[in-house]
Amino acid sequence: MRKKKILLVDDRMTTLKVLMAILADEGYDILQANSGAKALELAREQKNINLVLSDLKMPGMDGLALYRKMNAVIEAPPFIIMTAHGTVKSAVQALKEGITNYLIKPLDYEELTIVLERAIREREISHKLKHFQDQVFSDHCFHNMIGACPQMREIFDMVQTVGATDVSVLILGETGTGKELLARALHLESARRDAHMTCINSAALTETLLEVELFGHLKGAFTGAVAEKKGRLEMAHKGTLFLDEIGHMSIGLQTKLLRFLEEMTFEPVGGAVSRKVDVRLIAATNLDLHKEIKHGRFMRDLLYRIDVISIQMPPLRERLDDLPLLVDHFVKPYAMQYKKEIEGVHPDFMETLMSYHWPGNIRELKNCLARAVILAKGPLLGVADIPEKIISEGGRLRAKQPGRLIYAIPEQGVSIRDMEHELILKTLDQCSGNKSLAAQRLGISRKALYEKIARFKINAQK
Image (cartoon, rainbow, N blue to C red; front, top):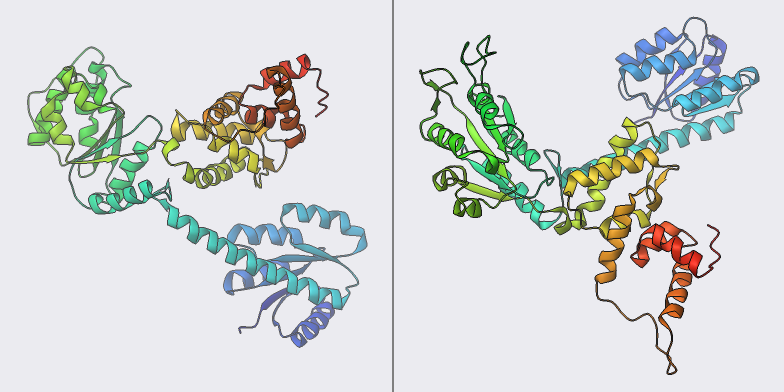
């Protein structure tokens, strides 16, 4: 096995010589530097430094400054500081900045070798774990789309097959399912990936504004048109145009879009000379376009043009097995954004999310998780961090599901009031007094649970 390489940093040559002799006997490959500047130079030049052992107090650049500068240019290896008793406070502060450990002078050399070996081993384990996590995550992440369920695997395969072509694709799915992410994946899998992908939401603009956005306009085409403006079609030349919510486009604009797709030419607003562009069209809608055709709100010929290949994005409620992956994917960046130290989620937190039907799909999940991270009081996200609506509605859905009878009815009978009283008591006991979780399991709101606790005079301190 390759020898572990340690960089020793101390301005006193006697200290360096002693440490070099001891660590060389332990089988380490040693680099030495008598200043922070020299150590930084070696760190840039040398590869695979496994650990840095540095004095804290040095003239010029001290040990902490060295760590900061090294961390700015490379991924700093485990960094251990040597310090005298008088500077322990500084060393503790260094730990908060990411220093691996600190050792008090005079050094205990038996302790030194143990600390060094442990730091190197922990970093190796951490790298292996990260590599494993990255490998697992890459299996479930495709162009930032997350999924391991069969529906998503089929979509990933379809994107790889269809993306390389120039055919028009129609993406179907409810609001918030990730249709724009899918469109971007198709673009990135195509030969047009180095050109622009331009996006426009047909439902967000009036007919007049949408026409201008699509086709652009000439100077003087209308009041306020003080200069010529390129439309999204021209901006997408050699690239991809993504038309979201195409089902909301007016019949007049549908006619112009159909002509463009047939001839790949268009006239900007206020112009009479046709312009030709090379664009791939990807469209998306949350409407049933066949129903829209029956009601005269969508052109059948346009549907035939845009629906060469159709891909259906499943709603979140149909792919709940992907929820843990999605939660992990979104919680980490939210924790960084809001400067919160979140280590994970409580099992009851995940259970609550799994019981909800998610009408807003991924978009609603992201909002829920952002809120949970912001409100979190500890390292684990819990049920208390979830909006009341999700807790109560998820509980009602579970309550509607068939299940086993939890009470044996005595021959003499039992009142509903007594059953309800006992059920609340047992549920609170199972939840260790956590009223949010108890309300969720009972399928009622937290407010309703408090009212029942008061009515039944239940002693619930938590």
